[in-house]
Length: 132
Image (cartoon, rainbow, N blue to C red; front, side, top):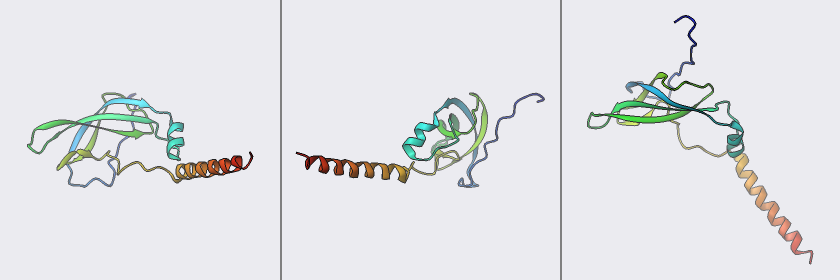
C-alpha cells in the first residue's frame, strides 16, 4: 500500500532443503540485546542486535498440526504480529530455515584470555612465594 513502511525480506538460508514445506511464521516478540556483552563473551561483535521470537504451525508425525516456536537474531526490529515465510523439516518440524547451523562456539580470544590469566596468576604466585 502507498505510504506503508516495508520491512526487510527474510530469505531462507541455502542450507534448507528445497523439498521442505513452507509455513507462515508470526513474530511474537522482538527484543533489543546489547551487542557489547556478546562481543566480550564470544570475541566477535555482531550487527544483529534484535532477537526475534516467532511461532508457526506444522504437522507432527501423526499429521496433527502443532505450534512450534523459534528465534533468530536480526539487524532490524520486526514488529509483533508480522508474518514471514519459513520452511521446516517435515520429519522434524521443530527444525526450520531460521534454525542455527549448530552450537555457538566461543572465540579463540576467550580461550587465550583464560589461559593467559592462568599463566600470569601462576607466575605472580611463584614470584610472591620467593619474597619471604
